[in-house]
Length: 325
Image 1 (cartoon, rainbow, N blue to C red):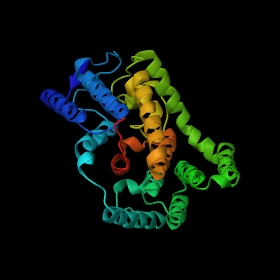
Image 2 (cartoon, rainbow, N blue to C red):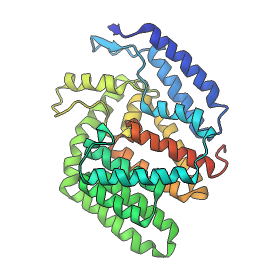
Image 3 (cartoon, rainbow, N blue to C red):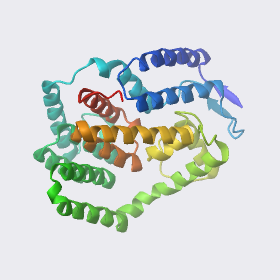
Image 4 (cartoon, helix red, strand yellow):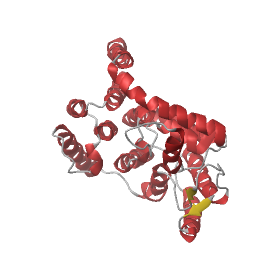
């Protein structure tokens, strides 16, 4: 097997990871997230120290190939604990949210190159909404997402908003639960689900290859999917209109890259922060619900503008109370 890439750039990045690790355990993040980040760093270094030997490909990348998941959490370690989110910051974000929704409705891509992707746009709006939640913003967000015609973003938005309203108006449980149940039922019985199921062959292929060739505990290594999977697609002859550099399911992609241990630690982080936000900041619990829904059929952990919102949400959660438990 021939290895390509910048040898010394890869080694220098390992030193950077070690520096981040020193900062990590001095931060005020919750313990579950510290452990998960540490695992991601170790599983990234493993790409260099113990490269996977598939004996299937002519060339494999040797340069730094971690994922946005790790990059965002690294940035949060350094900045989130030192930056307090003030009321004026949220006002700026409110204005940003309104403009993003209007740009989405009118189909422009002035804000970001990814705005031309309807699924990414819908996911972005559904993640922004909990940060500036109000009735007018909810209506504006639903209208904007409906123009994208992206069902998963709409489902995530409706589900997270319904969850928040359930927490706030407990006497209206039946009235609120019935529409969301009907909405999900309609989705699984409609043509939208069968078009969405076009991703299922890719999910099945990734899972089969993981069980056959990867370490079940550690996967192929953090960040390796976008290099491996296009070659796997070509090798297996899976016909598709585009090359999958993201699996369109962060849960399965995390299993592919980080194995059972990475999936378990990631689930613990989500549950831990969800329970914490239920006690300290219910709007941030709404954010975690929206994130969890989007991770099922999209890849919010790997899109730049969406990971920025994850950083912002973590900062708000950090300021809502003591998060070190």
